[in-house]
Amino acid sequence: MSEGYVRAGRVHWVAKGADVGVQERTLAPGQEIPWHYHSVITDTTYCLEGAVEIEMLGPHERVLLGVGQSHAVPGNRPHRITPHGDQPCRFLLIQGVGAYDRHPVHPAHWRG
Image 1 (cartoon, one colour):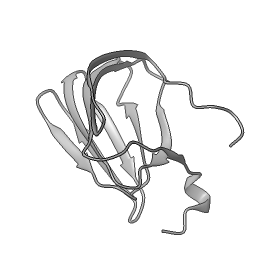
Image 2 (cartoon, rainbow, N blue to C red):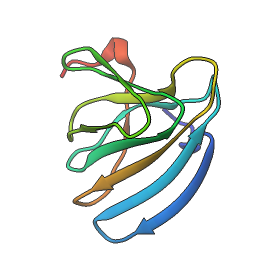
Image 3 (spheres, one colour):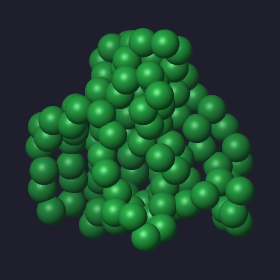
């Protein structure tokens, strides 16, 4: 991918350190955090409002989160995050522990 990553939706940094970050994210219907993976860090998503859908590869899996539910995606597992349904979703995205990296991936080309 030659284009730089643009964070979708509203992003509010709650905390940011050398090896952990916490964001409050809001995605409108049609917005997404596109397919990617991290080498080391875990992405933990905690739903605050609406419904959050996390789709993962290796193996293919979908997780639907309601308010108060969370799910952790470990390093080296491609995933994307979208609102579920026709309402926005708001969630905490906790990333860590380790050095942040982000690797875009196309699901049709993933050979994990």
